[in-house]
Length: 466
Image (cartoon, rainbow, N blue to C red):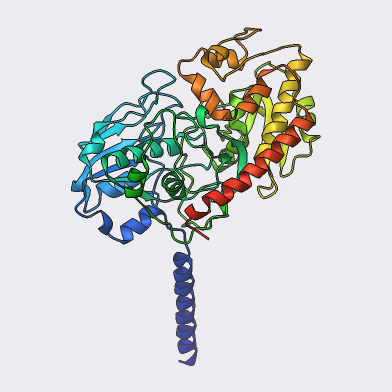
């Protein structure tokens, strides 16, 4: 009898302990903006005709895409249309691929990435649909890098709403790279769709904070009619903040629900490791001998795609060991390079070992330094200037194997090339046949550090999380 009572007491105690631990766990689990909106029962959107700019990777903490959350909600009948960014609603279209309009459960899905017009004109489509809504809801997955087009898509959509006097509600979600800032910066006249803000390469803000930055520190864009001060004052842009967000932590350091997983924001960021490498590798896809292998092209021996982590050389250098040795001799903090094999392709694996110590801008410049030396050693002089369309199409050693040559032939990619690098002084030094000197790198890194500190102070009134 006593033993039975003791067992019951112990069982009840264990149950209470488990319940308490579960309560504590769920209390400090990260809630996205869409989770908070659901808990509010969509109250702030009642009676509004809605346009929703989103895509499949933007989900709630139970892995349900935001567009499905809305379709299953009590305000489904308020939805006038969905809007989709580059890669489409499904986020599976290839980079730069035209995205067509479609329908979802009889609701139109208007593509804001139709890839129309010349390279000097926006790929964004200024649709008349914005006139027919009261509120634009935005829920997009950014990756913390300036050249990722989702933040430009959001910018163009918000500016259109401000011109029409429409309200904007941004559902916030994490910056997977945390608060880290890193150059290069974007020159104002080099802005395009790739690179739609004059901010550093790593901006250290959530997508909601970027929306606040747009309104509070407005920057002109060469493709858009400038917004007047009066329109900016009247702009109605509000953010549904996350709860329990750790702004300085990486995506891997957030406290998600146990069932939550990485949703690739675009086809070539299939995992978080590729997202980390994206922080320094993307400009290398435009200039130089290094090229990543895309998710659709090869797989590693483990079967996992490694875009931006694994790269090979355009010039078909058979032995990667000297290049790996040269990169590792730079003693870059928080990163190591390894000779690797990906399918039948031999190349190099970039492995970030310590994000806190890792400096993406230093890594980027040192890789460019090694890259330029490859050209010099092989007596190949790829003298190009992408500051103008004419210069971009001029090459002293025209060769189908050279990346700039292949890139220049593709319609619309002149402005993409400029946008990915972003800074004239860096473009100019990369375009000549001289080595990239240690002195130039040191000087440039110092300038970036000073500009980064100024930007850090400028953006301070836009940060929503301590």
